[in-house]
Length: 566
Ligand SMILES: *Cc1c(COP(=O)(O)O)cnc(C)c1O
Image (cartoon, rainbow, N blue to C red; front, side, top):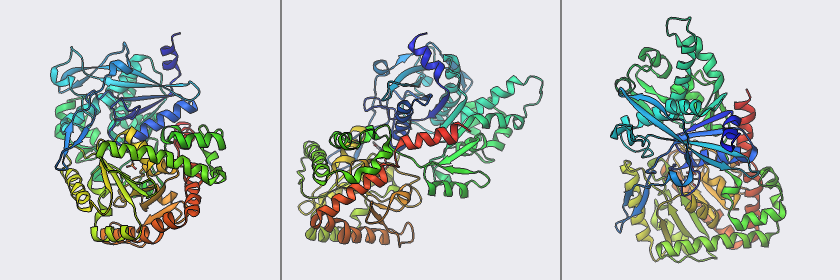
């Protein structure tokens, strides 16, 4: 048996995701959802959970961001070479789109875990000579194109993905949908189950729902209905044709529009949100479903910078396999933690200077904030009142580093980037600020290990979980964030970090902005400047009370025990 055959034979759980961050050179991700998928796969490999990942090849990537001299984002495609990293599988399958046969070729990328165990990743590709030129581009641009392009991508991912798994010889018993994009896989399962029951004449899906639900797990990531993927039935009829009876589909996916989240909810036997608050909100949003909570985590090895990892190796052996052991981080000697942190910070400051020419100081705290540039993330909350920012800076020096991409069609996100560049220019001479372009995996690690304070100011309850603050905690950074998503579980004020706006009506920017300034001026910055020992104690508490829990090994063990082994 060849190595590839063994890999195929062993996989039992298929994890379907529109995006995944496998490594910096493979541009099949855009942001948090993809990074989470990557961390999930890395933990599965380390823990020898028999997972196979299914995703799109996204040859043209998501977006390479350039910022021009006016502070505007310029969008570039961000291609990568599947040929360099993956091997083609001889298991081509076809799906029907707009009445045309569209061939899909699976590529195999092999992700190796800490013990040498492997997780196969199937990358679906329609760039094939036998396809109509318009169909060759379906798997090209992640989150690109219009509604119809997205629908076609989701057909390739769900229907094509399931067929490709079968054609390649996988024998999967559980299907995990990472967000609603892949919900057509469950529809295809339903269709195949019906087809097997030849005696039943009418297509009455309802009889087969329990059998499909037994096999399906759904993780929702969206706290508002407007954020879910939806398609008009007119479009669905045009693209999908007679693939599935539209009236039956309406019963499963919503009467007015095909809602991918509703489809996934209807066809899954286990449903979860990505943090406790998010599960509560989802239960209210989708009455009648039991939404469990499995709070996200991040992959320890991926998100701990080398100087800090070396320190953990010395003082907490075994932490990579059992991040729970970081509960003992309080024992790490102060000076060793501080010097490891300063080493990571030094590398980051060099990177900032090389990229932007802005020179920052080692003994002045860096506020880092990197996130998708979109309205609800409110990346500019810190700059609400520049007079206040300057006056705080006069008492307690600090520096600010930002990064983040706006989706090419998110005009308000692009406006935010321009506005932030204007504000950075206004602060020149009083507060050192820099914006680094093209936020990605590599830059992400530099940010979450080289800053001192990690700032996150989303509009509640929009941050379903958030994960960058967890990465920051692994490196001993202190979170200063709005109480939303995971931070509601991770924040112990003045112990693991600081919560913003606990007394505000959620989403009141004036109150939340004030609260941010007040925390900075009365708690965060004085502690850094005046009581270094207490600061370092808090760094250790962030590690021992956040990183020990908010890691993807704990998350994967819970998926295995609660969702996969039902
Ligand atoms: C971790 C990460 C994200 C997600 O961070 P959030 O806190 O959820 O916004 C997005 N992009 C990159 C490159 C990351 O590393």
